[in-house]
Image 1: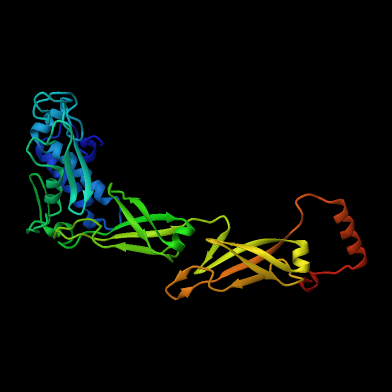
Image 2: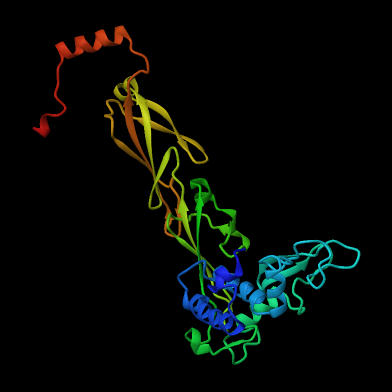
Amino acid sequence: MRDPYEILGVAKGADAAAVKSAFRKQAKKLHPDANKQDPKAASKFAELNAAYEILGDAGKRKAFDNGEIDAEGKPRFQGFAGAGAQPGGGPGFENFTWGNDGFQRRAGRGGARGFGDGRGFEDILKDVFGGRGGGRRGARAPGVDFEPEDFGGAGRGADISAELTITLPEAVKGDSKRLRLTNGKELDVKIPAGLTDGQTIRLKGQGMPGPDGSFGDLLIKVSIAPHPLFKLDGNDLRLELPITLYEAELGGKVRVPMLDGAVELTLPAHTNSGRTFRLKGKGIKGKQGAGDLLVTVQVMLPEQRDPAFEDLMRQWRDSKPYNPRKDLD
């Protein structure tokens, strides 16, 4: 965590009134209800409150200035009295995770409470966001009162926006992906089969807590990563299929890869490069039914040059010339 003086924007010699005033000003500016389009608003607001938890308490501020605790309120050495050390044990610490009830605390080695007044970080955040009981106050921090109108009125929590990239097979078949949010929360997101590129998944109640105790939603914009063979076209899949010169002229059956297996395509004789074949129902399944697989053939010459083949082409050129670009003139 950054230096709490830097977070609040005050000098080290600032008095308590200046610290309180700076916190109030920053809190109104950074509150999630006033920054609903900023996915980092919650973490910035939590950081601000953590900084004020240090500088807004005379004892903790003195301990921080003396180098006895760090910017997170943790003791810098073993046995520091009043900073969470337990008799006969090492320095205590706390871990915080984000769940449906906001920040959750669990004590580490030494059973430290972390803050000398016995209040944990989740207690502070419940005060800041108005708690689940939803009193008259909209947002509070130690020693500072806010009215709901300070942040545009009380109401539900702000939505959180996130982005998730998945593979094409995951989009077609569905899957479960683990997503880490900017506020530190991790959750498993179920990807429904048939998801299209740019589609948004809404997870209700997984957003920020609001002054009235309710939670906003999590909006996940899903992007499908490029596939080495297939391209998406709505619910259709497009594939460029290389074929030989003799397959193009003589026709025959060719193997067409799919996301799960393969099918055979019958090429008619004298098939030009660039011709597209539609395989019905072999695309992505959606609400309106399955899309198609569009196969565009590309005639490929042999990888190695062959003198006999070159002689044949010269004879063909001289004896049976033709101009496929005559319509372009």
